[in-house]
Length: 345
Image (tube, rainbow, N blue to C red):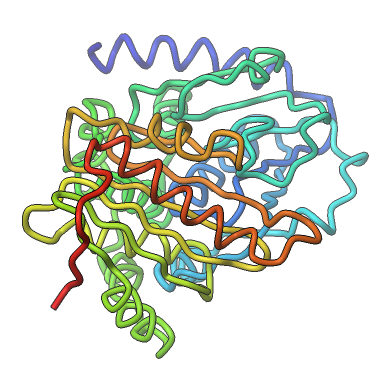
């Protein structure tokens, strides 16, 4: 669909949403746990839209942690204001927004029974989301930030260098420079924003210093990785922060001859897993849902998916058994169960 037509739809939706929000009091924007660049950029962009158009400056809330160095630097240098959801009194807020996630998906810590007014996301529409007042879920967009970028264009808002850098980096990061699951809206936004981006800030975000634990994780991942024909599974054991699991899955997918990777690691009392594929014939998001069925929650897109499994209470070793079941299901999905594994040497 041409940009002009997309902006007509964005203008209608955003104008009606803004009009409904006026006079309802304080606004809160909730993103998924352990927020990534798409969460951060989307929240900053939506905050800008509400602030300019309604005069109400929203609060951005999250749970978990921001562990990945690039994301920490992004939040710092772009001055993205974030507050832990756990310290927020939700009764003070008349408008509740949810970005890059949806009610009851399991990847956000918001009470599944609580009311969510506005949902904007680029993942598949969930049944629970249909109950919300304002829903804009476009699973044909590569990132949520692109959806909100088009609201800003449709409403004629100025996008300064910091906001442009945030949205640009979200697209760059999530789509791997437009190479993974980027569609026409993402490509157009990426190219248009590049002229406005603060290149020095972008360099700081993309080239952060890494703690020694990051390099220990790489070594442990390579030591524990097992190759089964065209797939890799790896038990990363305990990880310093959840985002490391997806990052290492992306890293291993670059191995020659590999089409799919399942990486998992323990964080606090949960097992974090990530599936990556470079094959159009697979669907990582659907595969995640199948391998975690009855164990936890998960979802994603064609080339990338993620999930989480909580440890069973009062059962020591439950995560170990669940991990082995995940590996077994994953290999069965690929039709390579029973293959003899090889290590990376």
